[in-house]
Amino acid sequence: MAYNRRMRHALAAILLASSTVIPPATGAGPVATSLPMAAAQDAPPREQGPFREPDLVELRTLDPTIKLDIRYATPNNLAGRAVYTQARAFLQRPAAEAMLRAHRALAADGYGLLIFDGYRPWRVTKLFWDVTPPEKHEFVADPSKGSKHNRGCAVDLSMYDLKSGREVEMPSVYDEMSARAYPDYTGGTSEQRARRDLLRKRMEAEGFTVEPNEWWHFNYRDWPQYPVLDIPFEAIHSTGGPRTPR
Ligand SMILES: [Zn+2]
Image (cartoon, rainbow, N blue to C red; front, side, top):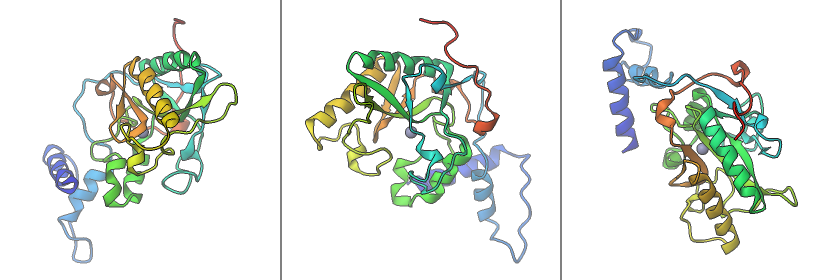
């Protein structure tokens, strides 16, 4: 199913991208039919705008009580090695401000937000797809479409306890590829499920929706307005915190 969809997408990309130069296959090289597929997947998808101008805000500048645990800058992630050279997290400004409001609402419940990932360059999405076995592809974004993380409008997060400063227990750990990761999973303890549901409620109140198979992943409603980006963290010059305090 996914393969057919990818094939169709790749073929559509070739038909649209008439200016793409595909080197002719030689006798020693790969078969001609494999070349367009590789070409379509080695670059971000070509999209029709118009899009809003990217305005990536570095999340740690929003509020010093927002915690970061950028797993992809460590070997503790699904790739088994660091895929980010810097432990930083960004979101497009409206998403960042909405997340900040959720963080402040959670303080009344005794929790703060713990960020695992925000904006993700497209090439990292491609890497995750390549290292994930096909039977687990439901848990990673298809690089031929790009991820809402690539648009700076998705955030992976959990909560920490304000008193202890420690990450709370949820029904699964971050990036766990099992049914325990589903937001409607009915197992685990009632405390774990209550915390998961509270996080979802506070994020939904600010315009986010939870991913159907990942309790930690939230998409901001403005995502269709931003393009898939492949800007490395080093090249991002964040404009800082909220423009106007509210
Ligand atoms: Zn995610």
